[in-house]
Amino acid sequence: MEFAISIVGRPNVGKSTLFNRLTGRQHAIVHDRPGVTRDRREGLGKLAGLEFRLIDTAGLEESSKGSLEDRMRRQTEYAIANSDLTLLLFDARSGITEADIFFANAIRRSGAAVFAVGNKCEGKAGRDGLMEAWQLGLDQPIGVSAAHGEGLGDLYDAIVELAEKMGKLHLLMPDLDSAKNEHDDDSEDDNEDDLAHDPSFDEDNPQQSLTDFDDGDINPAVENNNSIGAIDDQQDTGPLRIAIIGRPNMGKSTLANHLLGEERVLTGPEAGITRDAIEIPFTYNDQNIMLVDTAGMRRKARIDDKLEKAMVDDALRAIRFAHVCVVMIDAREDLHRQDLAIARLVAEEGRAMVIAANMWDITTNKQERLKELRYQLDQSLGQVKGVPVVTVSALKGKGIDKLMDHVFTIYDRWNWRISTADLNRWLDVKLEAHPPPLVQGRRLRIRYATQIKTRPPSFALFVSRPADLPDHYLRYLAAGLRDDFGLDGLPLRLLMRKGKNPYVN
Image 1: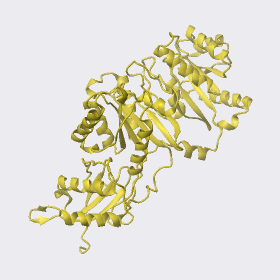
Image 2 (image 1 turned 45 degrees about the horizontal axis):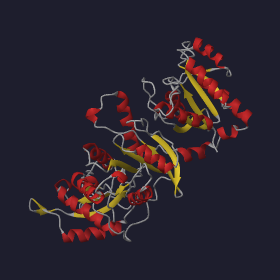
Image 3 (image 1 turned 90 degrees about the vertical axis):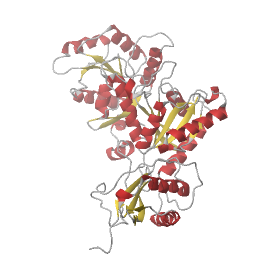
């Protein structure tokens, strides 16, 4: 059980800035334009030893029933109802407005514990506006500067005093070490494994002699075999991070809501509703998952707005920290250039990937359409050739279980490790079947191979002359790895290093 605090208020009063300040993470998009935040965003808030679940909300506005603003307001009301404390944030420099009074009355009538918090109180700038807050009929207003971190000591004292009265102070002061282990999901999870079995590998400077190669062939699924080792023992113990990405209006938020079993993020006919990348923890088949719903990503050439650039940057960050990316496409249409660009980004980051062909329920000529989509992927995306394509209807919830089965399968493969002995027996077979080419009358020699990391599967090849080994031979080896070890659907990394002659002093 956690102590929950929600931040509410009019648009553009600094709610997301305060959220970023208290969570210590620049996750919420901050912009001068009003109404940037639309969904609830949750994070671990910390304040001088206190820990709590912090909820950022959309700006409170009077609105007509059924409108986007009305749906945003209902999300905010839900956050208030499920919080131990609500911070009603207002702009102290502008003073109290009719909207502030209206919503203060509404929150007070709900019976929720609420503090009036005046933001932008740098120095003496907001003193007059802070005094105006007495008319809200709440306790003594608290002045802070979210941008500069001023006034947080007064906020701390007020939260502690309230928690003591509620008998919930113990929820605000958990064991800090265990809390850190529970919530520290922000570290990179590539988990590079050193070559302890290979004395010639330079751990201090591994990149000096390695040449990165992103292979371009991914083959259809093959049967797993016994040469695959256990899932990497150094993988993180946090939840499985799944990012839902794609162009605008592909049904990403609708899919997220079906997975969560509630209207957790805003959906509607309006394009581009989602702006922030919203992280939501949930459990699916006893598996702890952090689901990330992202804003639609348009072509870079069409982005000339700073806000949209920030939205895309947020989505790119979600890709970098994801384990599996679900790329949403419109099953009724041919693949767009932007669909392919997004998929390439995922492959370049080394993330596992599943393609979700949405709107399948209203797609005509289904078998022909699916065949055409897979053909287009094979022809246009060498890095993800053979990636799973799952047909779904996010609106009706069809195909969701099948989609998640593929997510779990590709995640397991992403963590597979091949023993060095099995890998080199395989290499001997491949070298005998198709030896490396002659270069300047001398045959290239590949002496040794080892898997240096998982996530994605990465391999080092110790070659007599790495610079002379042609790309087509690397593609031959990579295709063999996928066929023989069941590594289909994954971006592989083949790294080359000059092998040392043991007879040379």
